[in-house]
Structures are given as structure tokens and as C-alpha cells.
Length: 315
Image (cartoon, rainbow, N blue to C red; front, top):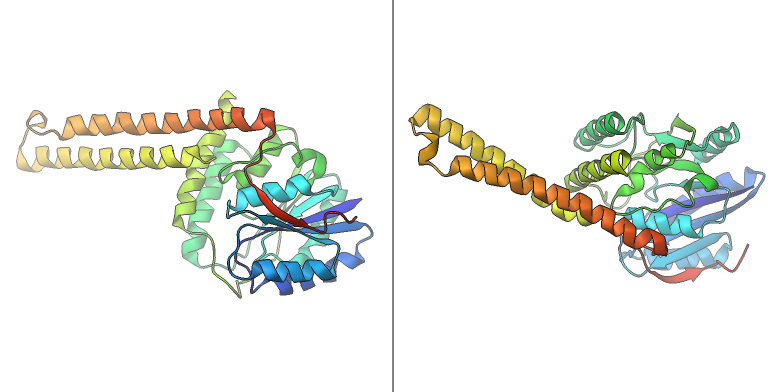
């Protein structure tokens, strides 16, 4: 048996050496082969040089330098594509995931589970970051039917045969459990240790929450009827629907409080027009998602470009 640890990295120079030491402390006590795959997703803060230094001294530490910043989903996809392990464990490189939990994931995989999903039950982030996550997790669980407390937790364990043929686009990495559940995967949720960030800045913001909602619409559509295009059309659609709501409320207020009939203002017509446009934009986004999958999947096209590799000629 072989274990692959996958680290998507973007501007984590202050955390890399400490993270490497913690992972290396855990791995020697495990009775099988291992590799650590660090995917440098276009970092510009010195992460490149630190990864080169670590790889020079440890042949088990393998590095992919992507040609630019593609985003976490593409970085994870790149790591999964080159991994040779029987068990794959992606985890964040910001030291908030605890490498001491690796053995717990492996124990559950050995018990027969196909996927073990991390749950940051005592999450060490401020309330404004936790609230959108809580709401998003409830919404995702409700819509997909796959009940998990923490879809956004990067640290999970997968059997290779479950994940190897799955392609991801946009921000779809958080929906990995949904995709594999479609293929009958047995999933377990594990409470893990979550630590405060010590160095660097969080890459998460409110804009990502909205992107997750748009991706959830795509996942639900694909679940029922069959990466990024949805984000463009989806934003336009949501903006149009929001404006239609404002326009409709304004028309009602003018009618009730100023006694101006609907036919004497353009607001009702504008409201209907914006609703139609909003729905059309979202439908265009869904169609674009289908088209991009038709383009990528039969040809095996990657959503990333690798600039260089280190230590991939060693076992």
C-alpha cells in the first residue's frame, strides 16, 4: 500500500517548512510507502524557492510548479492526476489542518470506507467566515442528499480507484464527496483538529461563497439531468434577478404610497424584463457547463498547465 499526501499551495511561504516537518514526523511510523505532492499554484511569495529546497533533500517530496494561478480545484486535480498512491489525502498548506490526523483517516479507510471526509467541528475562524460555511453546508446537504457538516474542508481521504477518473472544474473540489457518492462510495465523516492560521492571509472571501452557490446549481442540474462558465453567466443572472426584485418593490411602493398606477411607470415592465434576463443568464451558464465537460472529458484535457516537475523520476 502507498499513501499520497497532496498539498495545493498558493503563497504559503511562511507555513511550508513547519508543515513539512509535521508531516514527516507522522509518516515514518506508518508501515507503507508514501509520497508528498506539493502543487505550487503560481505562488509569488517565495514558496517556489522553499519547495525547491525541501525537494532537494527529500526524494519523497515531489513538486509540481503550475504555469500560473489556476485555483484550488485545478491544483488538487493536478496532484490527483500524478499521484501514485492507493490512498490519497489532500490537505491545506496553511497549517490549519493537523498532520497528526492522517493516521485516523487511514484507520477508517482500512475499515472499509471509500472516502473519509474531515469535519472541522471546532473551527478556528471568526464568525463571519463560519456563518456562510454553515449555511452553505446545510444547503449542499439538502440539495444533493449527501449529508456532511463540512464540505469545504480540504482534508479528506480517498481510495484511488474511487477518485482517479473524476474530473473537476471551477470550484468543484468541495463537491468531491457528491461525485463519488454517485458511484456508490461509502463515506464516513471524521472530526479533525483545526488550528488558527499563524502565517499568511486566508484565500477565502464572500465572493467564494457566491461561487459555491453557483456551483451547487450546476451540481444539482447534473445530478438531475445528466468551470467556470457558470460563474460568469451566474453572476449576471443573480445580479439581474436582484435588480428585478428591487424594481418590483419600488413599483409596489409607488403604487401604495404615491397612488401612481402600474401602467404609468416603466417599473413593472422592467421587472419582468430583468426576471427573464436573469433566468436566461443562469440557463446559459448551465448549458456552458455541459459544453465544457463535452470538450474536456472525452479528450482528457487538463484544466491546468505544468511548468516543471521535481522528484517524479524517483519511487
